[in-house]
Image 1: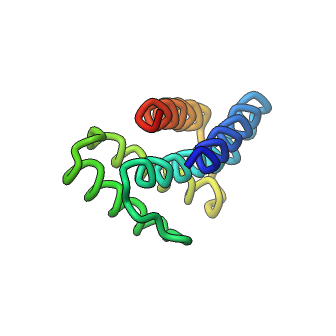
Image 2: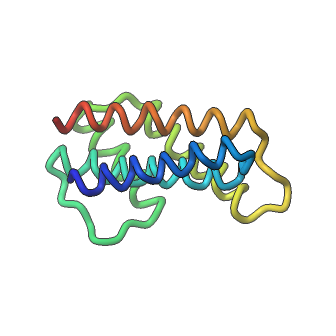
Length: 123
């Protein structure tokens, strides 16, 4: 569990560096993956049997059903932010149009908050 949170934190730091360097597409991509690993950490910390490999949709659905609806340990907007960050990551990685700086800042902020909340919950 600590290993996956450390992974999320390291990926988040890379996202911060990308923003600082004006690499907005890469910032969004890294920030999303930081949230992805934090979501895995949250599920593991809540006692959910964590899978060896997750699909993006599988993780979103499990996070929302288990942590938001069943356990009620996370507010629903965290699930929405995870999904919205994924959509921006798709744009960043696969579309020609670049991500705007405001979107990169927003996703980075969401990732920071998401990781912090997960860290507080597992301690």
